[in-house]
Image 1 (cartoon, rainbow, N blue to C red):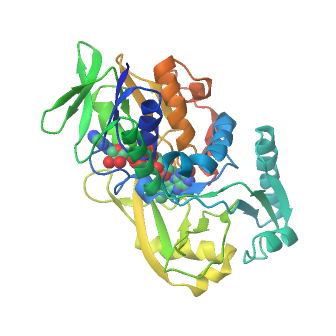
Image 2 (tube, helix red, strand yellow; image 1 turned 90 degrees about the vertical axis):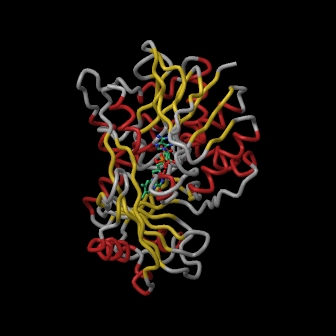
Image 3 (cartoon, rainbow, N blue to C red; image 1 turned 60 degrees about the vertical axis):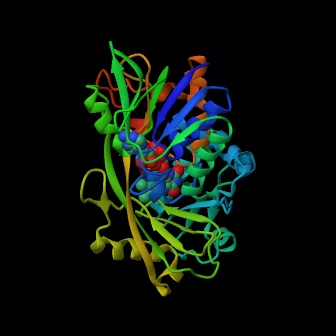
Length: 382
Ligand SMILES: Cc1cc2nc3c(=O)[nH]c(=O)nc-3n(C[C@H](O)[C@H](O)[C@H](O)COP(=O)(O)OP(=O)(O)OC[C@H]3O[C@@H](n4cnc5c(N)ncnc54)[C@H](O)[C@@H]3O)c2cc1C
C-alpha cells in the first residue's frame, strides 16, 4: 500500500488526502493549524464556483468540477454551503463587449455552457444589476460554496476512509540520501511516507527554497469586504470585464465583495492585513454594478494569502528528489477545481500519470518559457 503524507489541509491538500484515502492509500494529513485556518487562502476565499473565463488548460478540469460540486455534499456527507445561482460576467462598453465575446467564444470551444445576455435578459435573470451592464456572459450552472466547510468536509471524509489527520503541527519534507523519506514535524517526530505532497499554499515557498528547488512560486495577499446580513437580493455571483470586482451574497445574507484588491504583509509571512484606504474603493466599484450595495453597511473586512505562479496556473507534480510532490500556486481560482484536482493528483500519485495535469508540471519554466495565452486568461478572470 502506498503511504502518502500531505502537508497542508486547505481545500487542495484535504481534497488530495480524501481522494487518496478512498483509493486505499495510507494517508497522513498534517496542518500547522486547523483545516482552512487564517490566513490561508481557503480561509479567506470568496468561495465562487465559476467555470467561465478559465484558460483552455483548465477547461476539462473545470467542467468535471462543475459536475462534481452537484454530488459533493452527499458524497462527503457534509453541508458545504453549495448554492447554484449562476455566474454573470458583465461588460459596460462596446469595447468591453468585444472582450466579453472573445471570452464566450473561448469558453464555448472548451465545452463550457455559456450564454451571451443583452441588457434586457440581464435585468430579467439577475435583477438589481446596473443598467450600465450592456452585455453579459452567463453560466447558469455556476454558484458558490463555503471553502472552510469544504476543507473540513474533505478532511473528515478522509479520516472516515482511514486517513490520519494531525492538526496544530508544522511539518516539512524529510530528505535523506537525496530522497524524500517522509515528514519531520515540529517537536522532531518523523513520519515515514513513500510520497510527500507539499500543499501548503502561500507557505510552500519557504519549503521549496529550504530544499534548494527552483520553482517560480510567489505569494500575495487579497482582501475581501462584506456587508452586514441583508435580505436575499442576489442569487447569482457577479464579475465584470472592466472592473476589479467580484460580488456574491452568502447563504447567511452577507454581500461579499472581492476582486484583485491586494492586502499588505503584516507580521511573519504570509500574514496580511486589509488596506483600509482601498476598502471604500472596493465597495464603490462593486456598487457601480450592483447599486443596492450602496444602501448597505460594511460589516467586516479580511485578508488572506495565496501562492501565485507566473502564468496563473498551479504547479502540480513530482518535484525535486524522488518521493516529493508539489500542489501549490492556485493563483486565486483554485477553489472551484479543488474536488477534481484532488482526484487527478491521487491518480497521478497512485498510477503514475494524469493527462489533465500535464500543463501544470512544476518544471514547465525550467527553460524560461512563459506561456502567454494561459497567463492572460487565468489572471484576469474572476
Ligand atoms: C481572498 C481570496 C478569494 C478567493 N476567491 C476564490 C473564488 O471565488 N473562487 C475560487 O475558485 N478560488 C478563489 N480563491 C482561491 C482559492 O481559495 C485557493 O486557490 C485555494 O483555497 C487554495 O487552497 P490551498 O489548499 O492550495 O492553500 P491554503 O488554503 O492556503 O492552505 C494551505 C494550508 O497549509 C497549511 N500549512 C502551511 N505550512 C504548513 C506546514 N509547514 N505544516 C503543516 N501545514 C502547513 C496552512 O495552515 C493551510 O491550512 C480565492 C483566494 C483568496 C485569497
